[in-house]
Image (cartoon, rainbow, N blue to C red):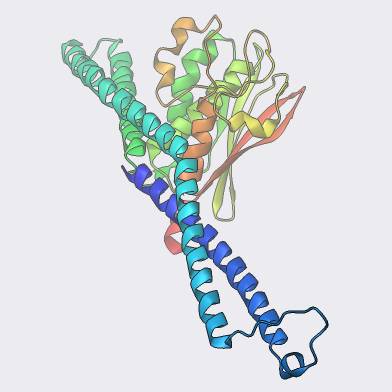
Length: 344
């Protein structure tokens, strides 16, 4: 509903802008016409000798002004109405597309909440039936955490579909980096890749779940293109009021697409070793079951990096390809520190 109201406001704004331009043109034309008529009614022109065969028509200047005002106002009203109708017709397909998108996201989010709630309940039962000394209890706990994160992602989707303002918060960068690496360790081991980290002991201005989703997606993409036996590094440095987090791999670089476009939805680069770049789907908690297919190729759809860009922008940060080439690619995530944001 909010998006539809926004489209209606946009169409009205376009209508008013076009009407204002038309009004300016009408007033300019009317002013020039009246100026010419008044110039023709000068005493020198009126009292001068008539040319042979010419016909003179004398008009009252007051009548000319009144006629010009009426014609001008009528033209402005007609132009405004036409502009509003044209704007409405122009934005109607966009309004319909946005409405369909909102309905899909809302329906998908709502339908996913029920099975996730059931999954959470079953994992809770499993945790209660797992003895404290059972080595599998740690895995059950990780699964419960991953299911909770998935529920948070679905809630975020539903909030985005309804136009709810993003949730604000802060988190410790060191802890979230460690959690993201733990999520992806199983997948990395299955591909013969190591993950190294170098955190900064500061808090950044976004919720832990959102930062974890960003890091997991970037690490997932790096693992996907890192050769076996190499290391994916996740390094954070403090730079003035921001944390600059670099995720680097030693793959063959971005090919077949401009590096700036890897953050577009459904963007793909050229195949590299059976995979495509710029399509990481990793979300927070993705590592829980990733190892099952770690040895083979995964189906990708070019959404993960787009979500990273949206999350970073939502919280006042940015993400970019800092460097890419035959020796690897470095993605750079820049986020404001929480304490700096409080001072501003």
